[in-house]
Length: 381
Image 1 (tube, one colour):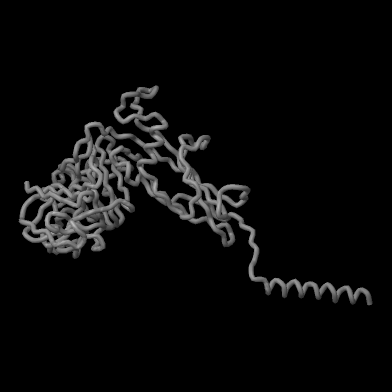
Image 2: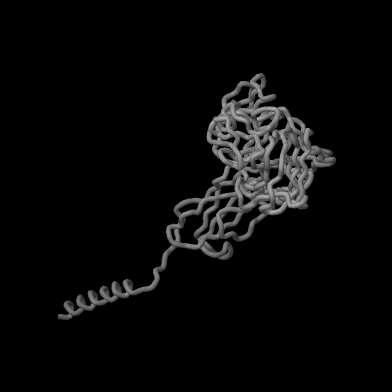
């Protein structure tokens, strides 16, 4: 009898436990790491730094959200070190709630100063090389919870990413100049058959910003491209396993707006996606950029092609340059990011939001857009 009573009591306790669980308003989970955190962005071979562009974003660090096996708030910390074992931390982000962080040129310049790097190469390393470059290491850690401090067994840290930095000499800053190098391809201009709005060729022109160094902002399509000189094929460069060579293979591009860099000294190039930087362009009936469809029709007022892009003046903050652009009789405006949310017209000599269109006459122009002072100049060549 006692045994029967004992079994009934045990069964009753089990039923109470089950009912109690069903009536709970919350459940308690134990977080267990099931997927590591990793950087998702592609790092450039070298980040060239200049004090005149200190306000720019060098790289936007992006990482995945790890799965700790249970619903949990996740806190992130990004660290940058001068050593691969992170024996000392040169910069720490502190606790972050989002899975991305803008790494500015100013941040990297501060680390370069700590390392004693110099812009003009006045000091050298033990091997005789200029003391203007260094290798940094970045990692991101994820913590299950609202803080990275205290005892937290649920954490994951990424593998380190390499960030190579190089200081550019800025003493006696020189303005960029229009060069005879440009971009051509199915990702650019139908391999030369579609005008991108410049006077010298149908290509997207590059500006010379240093010795054997060329750059410009460019909106590319899905496709391929090459670098070429004088709008022709006598001198053209493709990517042969990471090195630019004459008549080399085409370079694959994914649609987007990029800072394109061509370094002839290193026989290298880079495409840096523009996420946070302001990208200005011209739009209107006075442009000569043609539609992407190859019809030969002009992309008036932004229809059929992205705007011809300005390049930020490295010597003057808030100033943007468009050199050697070809215009026709008509009207233009300045707008940001190929849209109309921010568009500027001329109201009695001052640029204002949604202002009147600006009249143009046919010719080749250098245009300087000064956002800081709300002014512009158009110099006919």
